[in-house]
Image 1 (cartoon, rainbow, N blue to C red):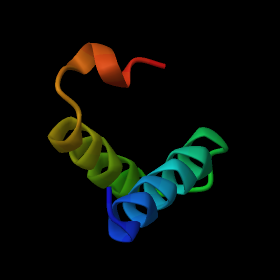
Image 2 (tube, rainbow, N blue to C red):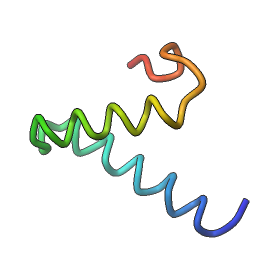
Image 3 (cartoon, helix red, strand yellow):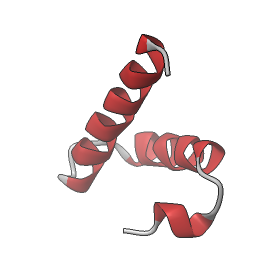
Image 4 (cartoon, one colour):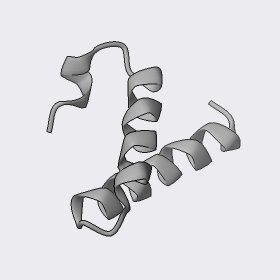
Amino acid sequence: MEDDDFFKIDSLLQDIELAENGLTSESYLRTLSEKLSDLCDSAETIVN
């Protein structure tokens, strides 16, 4: 893995935490959901 991969993972984890704490807009939640769907192999991977 490259440094950029770790940056992307860290950024995604921060986005998820913001969303879980209700600190994102509805449009950002949709964008985050789409990003997770693109990055994960199945819906089961994304389950809370």
